[in-house]
Image 1: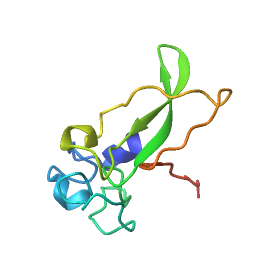
Image 2: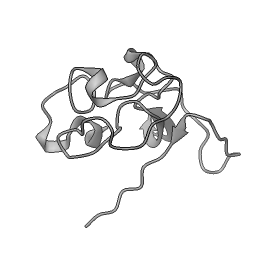
Image 3: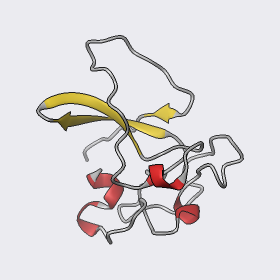
Image 4: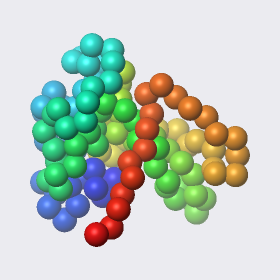
Length: 113
């Protein structure tokens, strides 16, 4: 969520990179019901693309002292309320439970320089 908000450069936007969802994300109103290549919309303050919309991101989260995995960011099939930087989807199983795949979910690999 910190990265989606723009880190220390955050402008306090509702979506990752701006307050106009259409300029930063593919979602149900503009996606044509499909995913799109990365970086075809505007980036956020950190230069990160698609932190809102296109595909959900599967993220580790600490909810009430328990490490769970949640979906964040919305997808090409999401309405605009689900694409906000603060929306957190229902918890998914931990790493010790069976894995699931979804047609509109991915993950982001972060590498520290």
